[in-house]
Length: 255
Image (cartoon, rainbow, N blue to C red; front, side):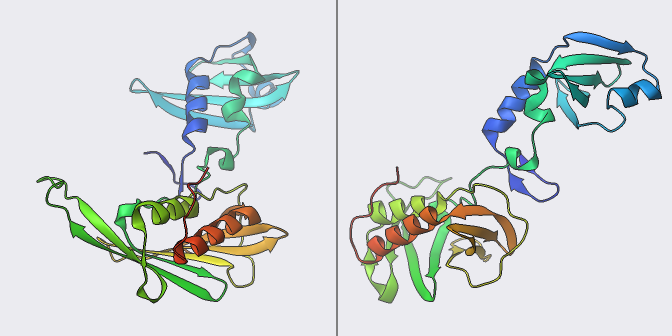
């Protein structure tokens, strides 16, 4: 899977990436604006300080496109290796020429596969909720290459909880929170909600915190770094689902 690696590492928005790939694969020029442009011409067309540059590889060949100034609904564009300036409709290049980093980011925060998580600790304010799983190998469903397991779940005080429906629906709600916009700083104050994931097959701990940063808005901090902004509605949905799970009531399947 592709990842954004600079300036930070993020999962990629596959829909946006696909749109960019389509735009690049079908790109064609509308006009020829200049041939063999000199430095003055490049400045006139905004290509001395480009709006956007995209480099990519297709069919084992490397390509580079540079978009300069925008005028009358068109961008001035140069193709690396071709000494000419083309006019191209903004609608053909906007997917990459007008996109920012956030447009390319996956809106999900973190999606650990449910069967890898041995314990899921959720702290709401000052109340800590421990969801612990044990697994037993299911010999009838296991293969030589892939073991299968049955799972048992306990909650607060070691109380047995429903794994097959209630926990799975709660888990979908918890990891299904999506960010609305980016965040570049961690607000002061205690987290309103914290996730801690521990795993069956590795010793690392991953942490997601939600800290109030504005009216009905929370900043997500993933493993100590600001990640994005979510809504109060998302926080409420998680805590309501958690309360149902811990009390043994039916947890509804997320919409």
